[in-house]
Length: 470
Image (cartoon, rainbow, N blue to C red; front, side):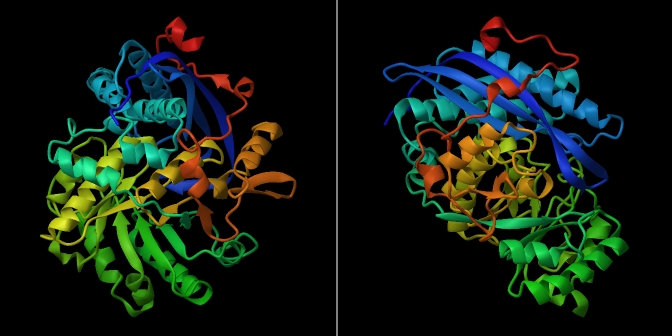
């Protein structure tokens, strides 16, 4: 089918503060609460009518921008400002395909970020949210689910931003998508998470039949090695056959990464090294592209995450020895799809070590965020992904009970009731995806309680045009 063109008639943006049950540390930052952003758009699709699309994503302080001169509140406000700027640009863009709209707006968003001294990763947050909501509206208008929509290329995805991809290969990749019927939960072991006691790792493993783990490391090599040895003992005893990844969140440098690679050869870490898939984003995003990875990493697979702030980031990183890139809906669903196409093309060529696309999470919350991100990685064929939002926020957090129960009724295979609260159902260690992929729209059968949300009002941004608020 030819990709339908659409016009946005309205954009509304909101937020809700989500308090954490216990602190979450990544790199040097400790987070105890963060706002979740929500977007609702109304789109007119000629020949199909008008439809509403929605999306949600956490605005995590100090992840999109780790500039030490900025406060956590400053980094969140930059996300708000970028979202306001993107909303205005999408409204003004006129008729286009869903992907065409995204591509047309990108240069202006990049120029705004340069003027405002906002890093590219943070500037991409607003368009990422808009793209999800626009795709949801489009697919609901034409009456198909996200898997069928991707296979048909209803969004009009092309290689204009990725000239390294042959257009015919991209079309074949989309048409041949084979989705995963379930995504295994890869549980985050945070730097502050207890390894024993009532809320310790053994009890969590038993409660959710966990077999996949993402282990945070903080850059203090001695402390990291000691903690990894403790974790390895626990996992080997309680989750035999486990699989693990490491996430450094930009806290290492080349010398310490070599030291870590050497340490993973110790007998005390042999079981972890044997089950280790990759190390995620060891270096500062700016240093990532400064030099090739050292050959002294003993075959350690290294992937990028925070450094993935442009459509060519993965290409540049692959030339330096990196073998993978993360998929995160907060970085842009189209970037994930195009990177997945690259992985398939590069692996088919077979000229270098295998490449991979990983499924990661920025504390995706119950409801729209976790449903859409899970559907995205499932559609791309990933079989496991980091899911950690439920570990830090109780159920739907402060959302009205009616909202939580609406999502549970829409997807009873994803949610359950626990202690009187609706929560993500991780008891089997798996999230089923068939219903998510088949639901008309982008994995959405329920909506937030919009009246309970606060309009986004950044401290230093022009207000949205009237059309964006009505």
